[in-house]
Image (spheres, rainbow, N blue to C red):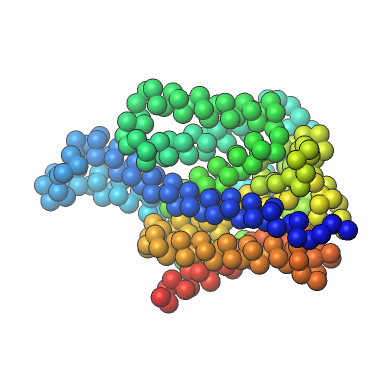
Length: 330
């Protein structure tokens, strides 16, 4: 029997990564808005020191549109729903045909293009914060293009756990930054409640999510943050054991879905855009607390041995929503 204290390092590592995702998503969402505003001002000849009153009509319209770009564009209320439906469809396809489809390099490349876009957007936003509009110069864009392409090639040719983790983190950060800056907090809250209910049904009642996780991880897709329990274990050679086990160590990896990182973080980003950054970090703290509670339940509680899998969203989204309610009260 393995000492449960040995779970602590893995919980600590995943907690640090979760904190990084939340902080970087908030950071990246600010960059998206700044990029839109900067590019619009440049396009319409608006100087940095020019006041809104001194702008002509077209300049004022452009400035207002750019300033509002990351604040509820038309139709964004249903973006989460559309994303969710697409994820369900893709999940079904992956579960049913994943092993056959993703064995082919061509299909991996098609899937890679969508991930490459998110990776490219991530590095552009970081570069913009560090270097300003010079990041859009040919040389810098070429460097980002090459860097994103190298990461994709690593995943295509050697999809080991560390590259899968890197992609899962980047996907969670960029997606949360984009979706969170597009939807007002109350809509996000409604979406998180719906997703939590679905996650509970999919994990506990139907086992859909377990089959989904097994399907996507069998072909090394970045659908989860995975932390190896042993430095010698390999995702490519050993895979993840999704069968019921007595000790979690027998799985080979600690698993936290990319969606678990993504969805609660969307609320923190939304609050950052539409309210205040301080409130966003308060929500982030509550998300982390809820994650630690979930980890304790999985590893230390008297129910731990009987828990094969837990739906993460009911815990994490509840924490995010409680944090949001606290920001409204304070």
